[in-house]
Image: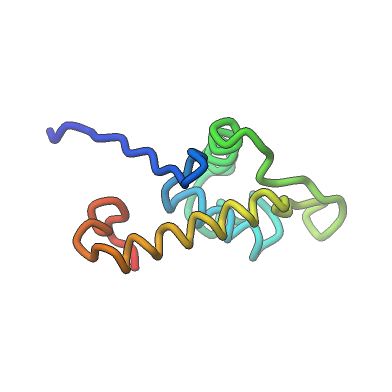
Length: 113
């Protein structure tokens, strides 16, 4: 069994960045309008998707989603302004990793673009 290495990515302000999983989930929430639909589309249980969001919110220190009322399922979720900002900054950092070191990127983001 390989030893596990935990890497925490931070920006110039020391603010934390997360891996691809939470970011993909946030994008799915934005596309589907619902945490439940996003979880289903990704093959996750609702409770696992909720844990991913809550853990990221705890680590980041701000809300990533807010509930909406109405719709076919009785309600949904939208991303907060902080979530949009987080996604933009994370993806810029991730893309910089690709441009800076094509060999380093797969080590941090295996199987991704």
